[in-house]
Image (cartoon, rainbow, N blue to C red; front, side, top):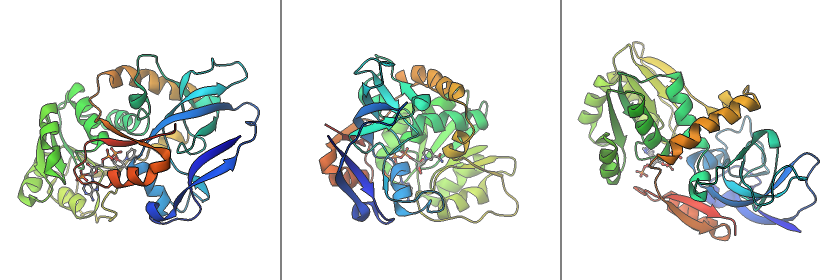
Length: 312
Ligand SMILES: NC(=O)c1ccc[n+]([C@@H]2O[C@H](COP(=O)([O-])OP(=O)(O)OC[C@H]3O[C@@H](n4cnc5c(N)ncnc54)[C@H](OP(=O)(O)O)[C@@H]3O)[C@@H](O)[C@H]2O)c1
């Protein structure tokens, strides 16, 4: 038996260093659950480590991909064959077979569509944990990269938590209508006056861009606010002014470092009902063998759909 895996053997641009390799597949280690992957999305969080941005804690060769959904094919009788699960926190998910640690395996409720289950972890859990850590009730919220899946969930759940308003800064104006439909006021990144005005009103900002945009927001935000940095899509760091809102940093991996399996499973019990009502963007499905096409879709400015690798 063989397994196809999209892996990288050195850091670099994902299009250059990722390669689909076929490898022999032995039996799973004792205690692991063998999962045949069905689908996995392409998120910024999957590609950033490939570039070497986290070179201090990840070491290739590695299979890429942090989330996805599959079906149980071998569990020593613990789980019914075919049960849909999220095989998380183990080997990369951009491969046809994952041998998962049952402690972190998440069962998918029957009514959750596969394309939603595939995206139920990185962004939903991060949005949920950020809103718990920095409550937004009664506050004016500002989001950057507001067209992203993560920002869409932050917006939806910020309103549900009683946020006074949500403003979303976008690079591509194409995201405006979808944001407006959520009740979010869209602002384009190029409109620096509007960005400054939105930041001056913001009491909590969730930033995934960094660089000059983060600096502009930090400069304009009132001192009592919270500026939460959770991504660096610009690839550029940012300077922090002396008089500023409180700078917070969110990394999902920090929260995972100490979580107990019971708490972890509890997070998903909270997430599933919320996800049933969440307007996650659509998906563009791409067979694993055509992964380069998935990367090209990923890099299309203004895209709404999330590329979803289907393992076949
Ligand atoms: N810290 C954590 O633990 C954690 C957890 C989850 C997610 N994240 C971060 O959350 C962010 C969003 O992830 P996602 O999966 O939701 O993304 P996504 O759905 O793939 O959307 C990416 C969005 O980012 C925008 N974008 C890309 N580069 C940009 C730039 N240089 N300046 C401004 N906008 C830019 C794109 O805008 P266009 O349409 O204009 O291309 C697109 O709307 C990423 O930074 C990711 O690393 C962090």
